Image (cartoon, rainbow, N blue to C red):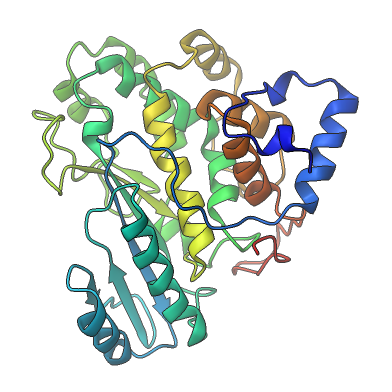
Length: 328
């Protein structure tokens, strides 16, 4: 791939490419294999954490590994899983130390052939102070998520190209709910009023604000987080890092989004849940999303590679299916 598309300083508007340039870009992306990065260029105030579910590795084995190696990580039981559990990270930042730990935990699961195809999911928590007390940023984020949840869903399939069987039970899409409350969002005059105008408080929804302190959104309490509940888990550290990059930069970009464009999309879109829509490849809207959220070509390529995978689609199966490998 030409360096121009792997440049963390260049910021080409992919959605504005002509047909010839777009065809070249997509062909090059399909050849590219994602690598683990030493940092994501996140602002120092952004914090995040992960919950990695797994099956077919005994919790006792995971307990021993975590206890002996990582005093700030936790190994827990999860009753929704069969012979497995959940590994929970500490509050992390964009530092080499934390990326090293995440990689080692994922490698532990991968080497033991942990099952992430059936019941396991993945959760990412991002500090709500990323949006803080900026009401417009909260409104923009809600609109952004509503418009592009179907794009995010396929991206969050991770190294699979379909979702696990019980996705609607443990990571229910929320765009239909959010869309029906957009007028309430627009009329909100304070951040704490959003808590009452958005009934998106169920723990098992794809996006939830259960832990957000709407009265003190700038506080650094580790529980003051926005949670993204992903359709699938993964034992691949590159996938986890790429997911974290997208969640954090979605929130961070919400301070500078094109609100008029999002309002246009909301006025002209259909936001009912449809399994096919949430699983198919939609290049046009994926390009819109990356141009809105990311400020450099490298991040855009990383998102698009994981989103496109290898153009695999399957609208009939009710289980997660591994995609052809696209990670080094």
